[in-house]
Length: 140
Image (cartoon, rainbow, N blue to C red; front, side, top):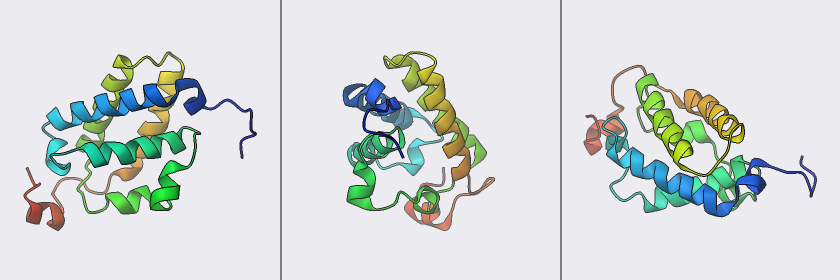
């Protein structure tokens, strides 16, 4: 539990910079051949939820939990085939977005390391698309 005046990644980075990071990240995701097939064409709602989640994940207000309940990340990502290659692609987009956002080292590295652990935890397949993705045409 953090004390009222304890500095967090969120308090250092701030809402504006966090939103810039997420917006740039999803711009990169939308252009990535391994990732764009598993994301909706309109990433507005996805980005909004990611902003809520990262706010909470980085020590800010519990915006995600207040609106959506416990994150349950792995369960929420199970309908999608997340291979090691897709996790790497996700991390590549995040690394690029972090480099382009005004977040200084060593904070940038710390954020990336936390997200790397989370991305690896999301891996749920080695190769083939889920039946959900195949039905939706996301199996490219």
